[in-house]
Image (cartoon, rainbow, N blue to C red; front, side):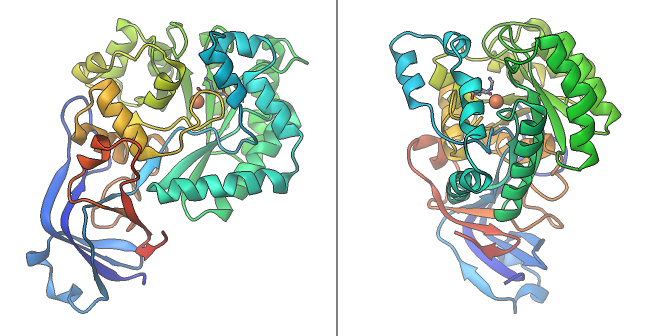
Length: 407
Ligand code: NIG
Ligand code: FE
């Protein structure tokens, strides 16, 4: 049914194509609502009583909970292969994430696991995870490299990401995160040079990736490395973003704004300059990853300051085997509200419209408005507040992509 009407006790959506900023939200709530679509695109959204006659004859369905836009997960580390629960146990016993990385665990371990698996094994591991994301309401997402960590390994992981995106019903954007860790065969300087002069141009030439990312951290890459990668990405015509100030302060947040990154992600240790820069940034969103904060038992980012400053805030899972093995956007929304103090309206915009903007999908995804794709989630309750109120519960009753029910 690429055309139809859904009637619901309520419909809640952010509006527009530019991200919500600070404490102001564009969230619109309609009681006794109707959503109509044709050719998989929204043709009417509003009160059921005002539904124009032209939609009255379309196949219709009546749902019992709120209709909200599909969640957009703008920061994941899929595709990966295998879990690292023993590292979680080691951290609970007092070993730090930095120490695990130094001992060859962490990202380099996921590199070995990925390298040891055949392509079909990797896809067989990732497909059910993407399906589980769909069941939790994720209708568009990011896929990333960063566990390939050789020239061939990174290009292979980008191809695997593209293959995965073709096998799943959601729309996916592929990001090249070759600067995630330095492979032991290289010095850091040599690897940055390899990424800039070989991998980014090769990935762009094969149209394997849509974006580029850099992990700026004392155990990873510097702000100057970010600049080099950003210049290489710009030469290749690719937008770029960065992991900023996650484990410690590096000034990456303000550098991200200065360099025109699409987003600065994590921000646990962003300082006043980073907050100020993100508050007035036209091009750079602040992507918050509250489940990785919880999972690492890390300090939270200065969220209230970011909101006061007017930053465009997005929420995402950071789904990966090391710092956030959580793929549920409802869980992220719940953690974002309770741990970071986001309002429910801010959390709705931060999990739909704003991440769609980060991924460059805002013309088609992120809100329920005429002309956008009919990607929506039906909740099992009429109120979006039930999503953050009930952590651990999957509040998604059904998921619709381009007007078709898919779960
Ligand atoms: O976003 N911090 C760097 N990258 C990931 C973790 C990757 C891993 O541990 O495998 C993150 O938290
Ligand atoms: Fe990440």
